Image (cartoon, rainbow, N blue to C red; front, side, top):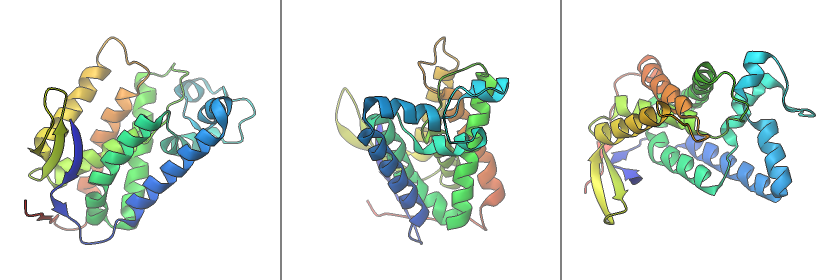
Amino acid sequence: MIPFKDDCRVRRFPFVTIGIVVINVLVFLYQLSAGQEGFRRFVMQMGFIPYEVTHFVNLRPGSAIPLYLTPFTAMFVHGGILHLFGNMLYLWIFGDNIEDVLGHLRFLLFYLGCGIIAAAVQVFFEPNSQLPMIGASGAVAGVLGAFLICFPTARVYTLVFPFFFRALRIPALFFLGLWFLIQLSNALGSSTGGIAWFAHIGGFIAGVVLIRKYRRGRTRFTKIRA
């Protein structure tokens, strides 16, 4: 299933959401411009490596990025065009609504906070991993968790593959609940396939918890007429 919009209107322009998308795209274009070896080196230097944290070692010789900054920098680095597109699509669809609920600055802090918690959860479950953890998935998962709490009755317009091609209006509670179960199933599987599934789970739960604490007043939204 591929979502392409929801039926919630926003009251304020999503400056932060758009800014995050733009930064991620620009960083990825820079990665591509560096060539294959430069791309790999950039990922190693900017990515977050759990083994470095748990063993107090530096696996990135010559890196100018301090270890404590890599949980932040890793959120803006992606391993491929599909990786980038998937994360930014979900952020574009759901991020503006959560920014509308929290306000611009609170949303930025919320987004970064979910990303940090997601990285911490990944370290807890895979402390010996030497693979660089990259991508906005953990932070975006936090946005999804927040959307589930704020707009459970909203509808998500979704393209359904591969047996047929049509758009369905799926309740957010079902769509995001299914998304979470898929992440949980993959995390508990025998092989993670190089994907930080536990970070997705941690980010989602962080979003559910943090949005209850930091949202201002009562959540309201207006549906788009279908």
